[in-house]
Amino acid sequence: MGPLVPDIIGNEFNLILAMIIGIFFGVILEQAGFSTSKKLVGLFYGYDFTVLRVFFTAGFTAMIGIIVLDHFGLIDTNLIYINPYFVGPSIVGGLIMGLGFVIGGFCPGTSVCAAAIGKIDAMYFIIGSVIGIFIFAEGYPLWEDFFKSGNLGNPQMFDTLGLSQSMFAFLLTAIALLTYWGTSIIENKVNGIKKPAFRFTPYYISLAAMGLIISVSAFMFPPREDYFFEKIEDIAFVNSYPLAEMTVDEFAFKIVNKDPRMVIIDFRPIEEYKKESLPNSKSFSVDNFFEKEPDRMLRIRNNTYVFAAESELDERKMAFIATEIGYKNIKILKGGLKNFRKEILNFEPTEPSNKIEETTFKFRETAKVVIPKLIKDNKSAGPVVKKLKRVVGGC
Image (cartoon, rainbow, N blue to C red; front, side, top):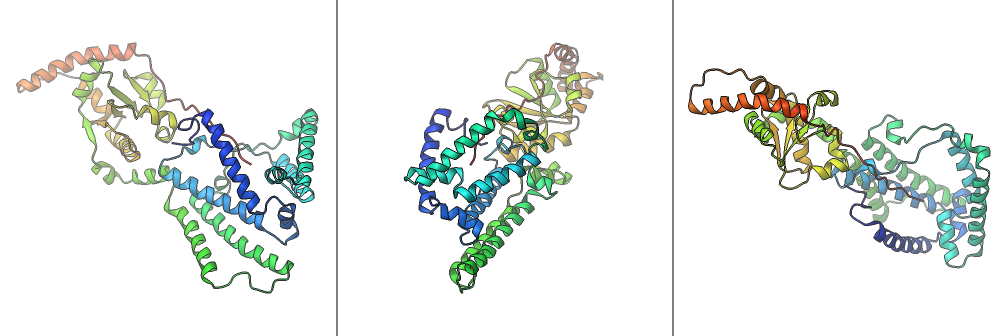
């Protein structure tokens, strides 16, 4: 459940890794010609759209990569930092940055790359950037109100446009491919090249086919939540899905004996859970399955996780999701908490018909007295708390 830092890659090694990646990134920028101001300026004058193609390609490649990693549960998208969006300041800042790019011929990244190989104009650009940062910082009280105005939070484009994640990814990739074609036409016209922008050669056909595959792949990897929510709507499928069960008597026996290896995962609404929380239980919601903190808790070896809800059907739905994600030692409480109350907490003794029933009924009479006391004395652990360790950064 990425990001990899700090859970897999330590903070110290992360700095070393960042330096290595940065060196390779700079080498690639320089080899692609980004160390010359003509490359970036060409975007504004129409004779070279390499910068646009590179950043468009980086954008939809990263987008598809995140979709695939999220589908297979290899990244926790809740931990990916999304910059807050301020409408007015973003427009003004974009105009200032764009003007700086076209005048200076560099962006912050390419200017450092060019300065590293001795480009004097890039060094002046960096000095100008530092002066601009200083002016902004010193004059911040003057434009602080405007800087914080028009806050729309942390929006995602597909939510803002009312599209599904897959549809947005498909459309953005398709727009990128059309943009490549359109900018090639503009380049040829500005540079006086007579050849058509797209030719039916193996090279161009292969590029078009790869682009089509990438755009369609967005529909092949829907968000895990959407896949699971669609599956649990099929009641017949949920009821037929093979799951391990625990009887109410075994459940009560483990509670009475305070078995530390039995962890109760309670899926009732938090208000109901607070009224009656069982010992060694944790309040859960379906969203917790896709977060990092619950993931750690549910992977402790040798524990048995008993899913409890009012109805067995709700338990089955949650257990299906947990099992498909890859959690082990999952059991459902047979008949749900409704049956547990009826058979244990509100047990009404009858005449036993055999020795087994006699023993069972005797235990239930004991459990009927002991468990309510344990519930009363239990200090609720409360819901799972999501501790976000957002990883920030970017160009």
